[in-house]
Image (cartoon, rainbow, N blue to C red; front, side):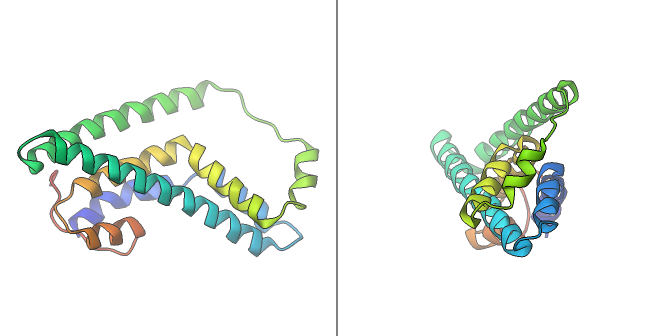
Length: 172
């Protein structure tokens, strides 16, 4: 339960993406097959998250197992470094977002979006999820806590999938 409570605020922050919310709202308000398009978008976004989760977890496990004698000490050090890097990256994203000009959409984009096949909508979901830097940083921070937690693989998978699990974390 401790792991889930540690990861939950980061997961909520990652899930509350204005970009993805707006894209889903536009898809659901379309006239042609709105639910199918929104579902395809969701599947693309989840696919991108699964890919990032596998890549990050593999990299963290490799770093932890090859770095030192005590996996727990290494996990604690790696976790602290991960927190620092993610925090600095989030601050950098905040500065960039605050300084960039607003993006405007043209009527041409709205007209042709309804004609796209579902696989292209899924691809858009994957791309938008993958380039949503603030959400990906929070997701990566949550993954970092899950990866270094002293729980078994099944519990880690349940926490990443949103199904619960948990136990003591190295930071608790």
